Length: 193
Image 1 (tube, rainbow, N blue to C red):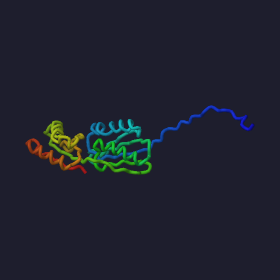
Image 2 (cartoon, one colour; image 1 turned 60 degrees about the vertical axis):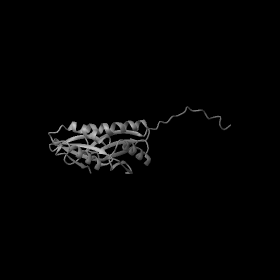
Image 3 (tube, rainbow, N blue to C red; image 1 turned 120 degrees about the vertical axis):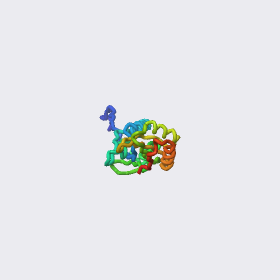
Image 4 (cartoon, helix red, strand yellow; image 1 turned 180 degrees about the horizontal axis):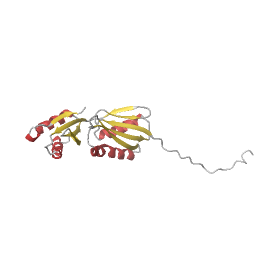
C-alpha cells in the first residue's frame, strides 16, 4: 500500500499578527491643551478600541507662527485599509463635533476622507474680565448651540474658542450678550478660518 509510510504529524499553529494601517487625522481645531485631550483624544480612543476598529497611538497640537494653536493631529492605527474605515472614524469625530475642514488619511496610500460639521468662533476679552465666569455665562447663553473648547492668552487678551454648527449664530449671540454689560464693551467675536 502506498499510504503505509505516512505518519500523523502534530498540528502546527501559525500566529499572524493583526495588520495595522497608519492613519493621520487633522482637525483644524484651535483650543487649549487639556480641552483637546478631553474632547477628542480620549473619547476617540475608547470608541476605536470598543469597536475593534483600531487604536489612537498619539496626538500632537499644531502651532501657528505666533505660537497660537493651529490644529490637532491624531495618529491612529486601524485594523482595516478599507475606505469605510476612514469614514467610520470621521463619523466618530463628527459625533464629537469635529470642525469643518477636518481630514483623515492613510499615511501609506494618501487615501483621504474629508469630514467635520462644526464651525469655530474666537472670542477675545480684555485682561480685566473674569474670563472663566465669562466662558461659563457664554455657554449658558448659547444654550447648546456651541461647545466651549478652551482658551489661550494672546497679546494681553484672553481668547476663548467656541464650536457649533453655525459660527454666525455663535458670534451674534455672544456680541448681543456682551452689549448688556459695560465691562464687556471691548469683546470681539470672529469666525475661525
